[in-house]
Length: 272
Ligand code: ADP
Image (cartoon, rainbow, N blue to C red):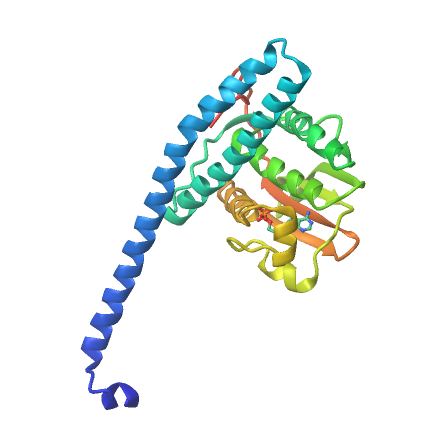
């Protein structure tokens, strides 16, 4: 208060200035998020055309050298699309409107489809993938968002594969009860580079990568875990990690296992 008076400012003018600065920052943030969302959509449209054409070409009989080129175009396009989708999701998080669509989810189908998608990537890194899932779930159909659930699993599994070389990545799914509520627990366990205590504190913050040299080596936006955390929390769950540097990491998340009636055969198929 003394320094405010010394600077010749009244409390009222200081509070007005602070309020104005707050509104300016808010407006700046909104403009930034809007810009990111618009750019994301503008880039996604031509990119989808490139990907669609590459996929069509892959179905035809091409000379081996051309086929390799087309595969590179498709894979690079997919990587770019992943980045753009992350930026779009982050813009939604900043606006506080990350969308989820709750409906019946066939748990087994979502998990198996995710493992199929990830298997090729694991092999490229010399990693084996193991799936530990109970033969039967108490509630095989739960009320959740299948697309968002698959997104979180893909993200955590991709990270596990990216930071593990010639090792083992295990996806373990289990059912448990917490505070008298049925809960599904997913653990993504890797035998990779691990994370030290300092790194663990900042993992789920936007744009955080454990160290800059690692980010240059492995690439990535530093947004994946922020998005996973937000999705899991919107789905009513929690997320965390245990890790030992040099030994490996276990990323886990838990979501409520609210039983759902099976509505239709394609209940778990959705493209966002
Ligand atoms: P990105 O992978 O795009 O950099 P993420 O938010 O998914 O962004 O991850 C943030 C950082 O967390 C990574 O850059 C890496 O430093 C660390 N990290 C995430 N998963 C693992 C893992 N399984 N093992 C070791 N480090 C990891």
